[in-house]
Each structure stands twice: as C-alpha cells, then as structure tokens.
Image (cartoon, rainbow, N blue to C red; front, side):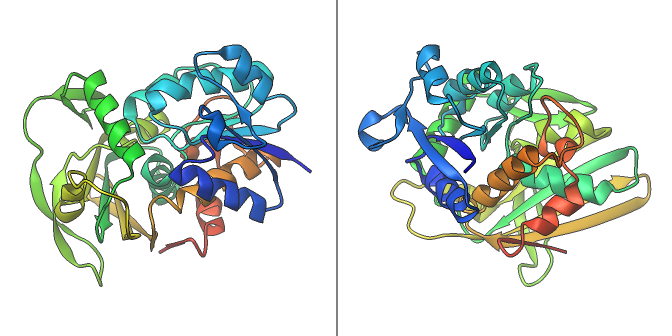
Length: 313
C-alpha cells in the first residue's frame, strides 16, 4: 500500500486530508510538531532536519497541512526534496508560496494546493483555454460567511508581519506593496447569490500562483464584505460556509467566465491536495519540478475530478 505522510495531521484541515487519503486507499503516516497528538505517528520538528528526514523514510509523498507555513513550508519541502518524494501543501500565505516556488527540485513540488490558491489557479487556467495571454484575471469569492480557524488567524498575522503591515496586489505584471485601504465595489455573482458588495484587491495565494505560469497583466481577488468581516471574529468555528468562486478572464474585448460552487472551504482543500498527490504518483502531470496547480496539471480534467465536492460550470 502506498504511504503518504501528512504533516500537521491533527489540525483542522489535516484531519480532512487524512480522511480523504484513507478513503482513496492510501496508507497515511501521521506527523507534526506535537508528539502528544500523534499516538503511533512520527513527530518531527521543523527546527530539526534530521527528525523530518526520519519521518519521511519510506513514504511516497508528503502533504503539509501545518501552519503558519512561513515556519513549516521550506523545512518540510526541503526534507521532501532530500528524500526525493513529491511535496504538496495547503498554504494560503503569499510569502510562504513565494518561498516554495523559489525552490529547485527534480520531484514535484506544488504549493497552495487548497481552496485559496490551487482552486482559482485551476479555474483561471481552464478559462484561459487556448488563449496564450490575457489582460486581467478576476477571482471573486462569494462566501456565505467565514469563521476562520485559529490556524488561519495565526497565518494571517505572520503574513502581515512579514510584509510590515502592508497589503499586496499583482498589477502591471508585478507584485506591489501598498499602504492605502482596500477598494470596494459590487460584484455580479451568479444567482442565487446575486450582486454583493466586495472588497477589491483582497489578495490571496491566487496572485502568486496564477501569474507564475499564465501571461497576464493584472490578477485581482475579491471577497464579499460579510465574509471578510468574519476574519475579525473570535471564537470556535461552528459552521461550514457555502461558496461561489467566480473567475473572469479578459483579453481585449473578449471575456471568459467559469464558476465553482461547494461547501466548507477547509474540507474541500482535502480533495484538492489528495487529487494532486494522486496525479503526481500516477504520472498525470504536465511539467516536472516546482509548479503551481494550473501549470502542473490538466486544469479542466482536474476540475472534473473534484465532483461532487466542487461543481464547476
């Protein structure tokens, strides 16, 4: 039986990933930093490369679900590269994504293989189709709400600290760091959600993954105002949100649109990450080495494989 190590297996998203791997018939090796939460697992510290090397012995791939990824992405990815096994993570931290994409590897390394990052990258790539370039990619997140996990909040704090409290956007073909407030507008989500107020330039991992391999001048993310306000809420995550991800690609006067729908932004990261590992291990990839989802995989085929977790139209 093929073994896949899940680092951060006891976290909120990690538990979904473990369940999805087992459902697909993989042997799961549990790992992470907290030995007390890993009975029968392989504890490993990101500050101890040798412990990571021991944890990866005999596994076919690793999925990193342990944030903040500013602390875990590079150490775990580098351990996977040393072991010669594929690495996938669910990081939505832009700085961690940039760190990982700067690596060099012979085996597959795919960062941001989650709801934020991988999904929009696949959608934009599928929408581009036969276009070789586009002027703009717009990614609008319509969430019924957002009660973030403690891990999401911690990762957000680390990201803000790394960029000195500035916000970041991708415009004119490059990343820009800014001090001004986020713009607001109304986004015409498809029914039944309909038009909703959104925060513009609400930058997620998409602004790193998409322009990594698609020739595009601007990549802009939007978040419904109600959901964005949930980021400031304290307390336990008590309900799963429904979501619509509306992606519009524009080239000159032409426009293409693709929409994904589903429930629970954390739970759907599991089929995204596990499908990625499965495709890597079965040779269904387009490139070798380090690459985001849309570059590594056949985007349209990958999206079809996500049903019924995510429906695409």
